[in-house]
Length: 426
Image 1 (cartoon, rainbow, N blue to C red):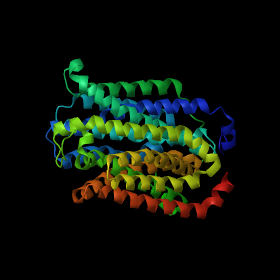
Image 2 (cartoon, helix red, strand yellow; image 1 turned 135 degrees about the vertical axis):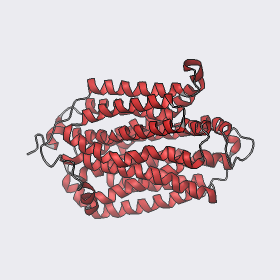
Image 3 (tube, rainbow, N blue to C red; image 1 turned 90 degrees about the vertical axis):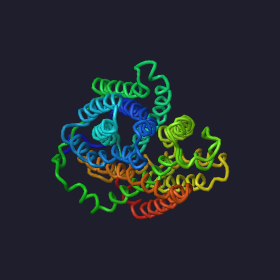
Image 4 (cartoon, helix red, strand yellow; image 1 turned 90 degrees about the horizontal axis):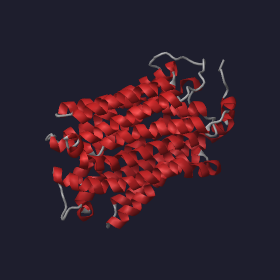
C-alpha cells in the first residue's frame, strides 16, 4: 500500500521543496551553461575538425541517453536526494577535468564524465512528481523548466566573460570557466545536501533494475506518444541551437561582427561571433524561463496541459519557419521573440502529462527513459541539421518547422483520444 496518497501529498506545503529543487537545478545548469560556448573555441585551439566538434557536443548527450534510465531507476530505489547530490559532485569533478584539459582526449573525457553524471536530472523531475498532485504537476514541471532555462541563459553569458579574463586569474585562456562551473556544482551539492528533504517513499511497484520499462512504455500508447512528442520537440529545437551561429555567419555576417559571409569559420571568426550569438540566445532563454516559471501558471487552469502540448509545438514550428525564411535580420529577431512561447508551453505540458500517465512508484524510471530519449534527440538533431546546412543554410530551420507542425498534429490527436481519461484521473 502507498505510504501517502497523492491527495495527502497535495496538502503538504509545496512551495519550499519546489523552491529548493529549483535552486539546486538552476545552480547545476548554470555551471553546465558556462562551458557550452567554449567548446567551439577549444576545438579550434586543439585543431579539431567539424566532425570532431560535432562528436564533442554529441558525446555528452550520448552518455545521458545511455545512463538516464539507470539514474532514474536508482532514484526510485535509494531516493531522489542521494542521486541528485551524488551526481552534482561527480559533475564538479568533470568540470575540474575540463579546466585542466590540455588535449582533445582530455576534453572528450571531461564531456563524457559530465554527461554520465548529468544524466541524473531525471531524478529532479521525479522529485517534482513526488511533491505535487496531478493538477499542479505541470506547474511544478514548468518551475523546473524555468530553472533549466535560466541556467542555460546566464551560464553561456558568464562563460564568455570568464574566458576573457581567464588568463589573468589562472594563467590559461580557458581554465577559469571550468573552475567556476565546478564551484557551482559543489555549491549546488552542498545546498541540496542541507536543504532538500527526501520525498515520502512509496512501497508500491518494483524498484529493481529490470529492463522492462522500455517495453512497457512502447506498449502503452499514452506513454509512448508523449515520449515521442518530447523527442520531436527537442530534436527540432536542437537544430536551431546547433546551426544558429553558422546561419548568422552565412546570411547575416554584419550582425555577427563579420564584414562578409563566412562559409568556413576560423577560431577568430568564432571568437568574434560567440558573444553576439550568446546575447541572442540569452534573450531566448530568459523569455523561455519566464514563460515556464510564471506565464504557464496562468494558462494551465484555463486551457489545460493537453491543449498547450499541441499549441506549443505549432508556435515553435512557426517561429523556426520565420527564422529560416527571414529576408532581414529584423525578421530573425521576430522569430526568436516568438520561439520561447512555443518552447515554454511545450516542455512543462508534455512532462506534466507524462508524469501523470506513468505509475507513481516508478516515476524516476520512466522520466529517466524520457530524458534518455531527449538526449538521443540532441545527438541526432544537430547531425541532421549539419547535413542539411551543407545543402543550404536555411534548410535546417525549414526541416525543424515541418517536424514541429507534425508534432502539433500528433498532440492534437492525442488530446482528442485521451482528454476524457486524464479528466477522470484528476
